[in-house]
Length: 333
Image (cartoon, rainbow, N blue to C red; front, side, top):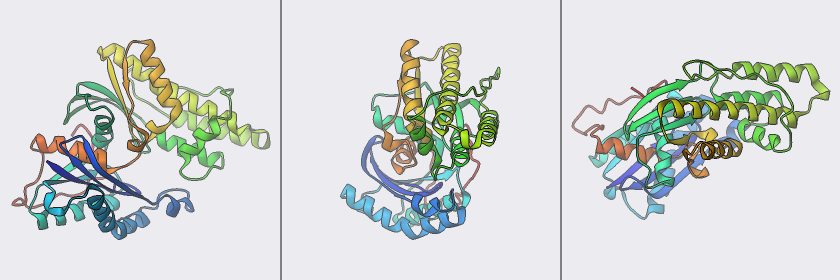
């Protein structure tokens, strides 16, 4: 079975071809980073227009790379949320039109489900149940993956997502967009010398507004004397320790032995190494996706869509094709 999958939730126009749920035949990503860099962040209107311009060509490149044609596609997977509503609508509209013309099913897929499913590509033998630490620009969640299409939210952020906190700290330190990777690069040249606050809630929830404010206050107070490398290192160390320590505590309390890292922030090298280290110390197993599957891509959407299709979670052409984008879609809906 062949799935053509589309991802357009933010500023990447991505299309992939997935065979038999986990084999990636093509994974094409057209990024808009250079366009949005001069604005210091993603401009939703511009992102939507760029998706419209590029999606037909990205689809063609994916088909050519996989050496197949439209007639070989069995179903179409598409991200319908969460994300920027205008950007999502471009992918959803294109997927519906293509599904109608080809007379094949369309499979609505949750973006965060896709990030978790990226681990199935890197680890072909991985199967639920397991815990997933989902960290991105818009989400910081601990999700219990009961089955391939069944999820239970264990913890979430009460304010900023961790990726959002990285981006805001980057702006304070005068670093370019995208901020997360720049903070990580700067941190590698520094030491964790600044004492920054951590938060702890009885229900495992996260909070990053306090540490973000502390970084802003330190930067404003020290100004010319500020050691940016040390502050970046202190921020990254504190945030990653909070993420990993909470994850380990949940695993102990729920008697879970396996955890899968997911989301754009899972590309952070310090976080990846720290999770591996802490899991090894506690005789747990950590699954960490290849770097190319950490940031937004359509291969992860195709894998997730394939499991949705197998579970009969799709639209048939004889239905109304009334699928719409849902900007604030929850993974445990």
